[in-house]
Length: 493
Image (cartoon, rainbow, N blue to C red; front, side, top):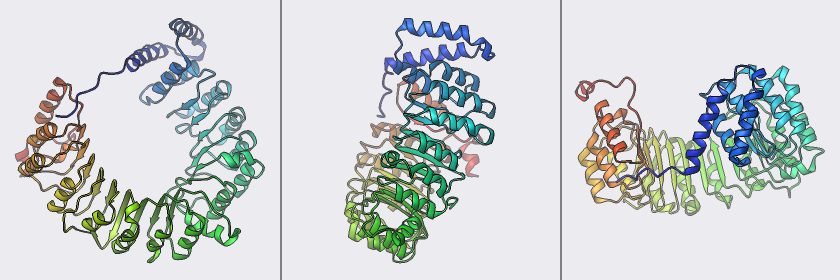
């Protein structure tokens, strides 16, 4: 049987109760001039209760993450709860009229923040002077996320006023050049040593020149990840042609588009510590060179040849734990993957051209399978289900041709002790009988959907949800589509 809902922790119940009371109080404030009395009363109330700074932190995060709340409530909550020892703040989404007030508030009360995420406060133009002032005052930041905001001047201010930043997110459409990168890092050796993750640029777009990114890599000796930049290989090749031959990076993740063999040679030479490599539309012969990267255990590919991947995995499959693949050409053989990738735990596939399998060699460590547009046969689906004893999550986007009897035979013959989530969004032959059987046979099942593609009516949904609620079962049934109101017979006609 699916697991029972756990008893909520006392601190979670208490926190929710206090948050509701606070939201109710703050919602009655109509202007900045009216805040003094409620703030005084609330502060006295929390002091009497013995509220700790950890509670202020938790309350603040809970309220700010609730985007459905009126922005004035979230703003006043920030103003009340942003105490001197609150360390982490994510503002969430705010409308333009609040930008100035939020920046001024953070400048005044956020001196001790170590992590700030301004995603949702899209500071531009007239507000940038306030952003510069904010950066001056937040000298303890270790994590700063300001997507779509940064420019060369912002980077300059970061370099002048921060020496301990570890993660910087300046991704999105931005005006960053080598001038800003050099201004931030050229005269700040402490920041250059501490910064390990930089999210920069936009996926699939070279809105920042690869030569500027090459400068960033060269100035950051401990950089491990350039998230959201899709032309890292191009920057590495530029470095390879320009830097001393003993130069090495500490990159652990790399994303590149249209990689050629010369670029791959540079990646192998300068990035020996790569753990994850993501190649889109690589030239013929590029995949074969991945075997020269001794630590790679996660491979992500887009628009690739299946036979080249199989040849690579024949050599290094034993150390691969994750395959994330899309847009394949040729035939993908699951049996061959099971033979060569004994430690594989995750496989995600989008757009398989041709799928085959032969002997049903088990995937002894596979726990996550997600396949969309995979052209899977029923026998191949059964193989993945029954040959993966550790399976936790199974998502198949193709039409499922199995019926209730097929599922009953599988569930009665094989154990699914670890299955936590099953998503068959297009399974027209499955009914409520399979839902009940999955609940009975899968002791850890907590998520089942999308049921709009099943022979599952709104009445079935109401009944199952009533059963789940009455038995305190910890299982989520994803809702039916809002237009699915007709009967199964009408849908088949």
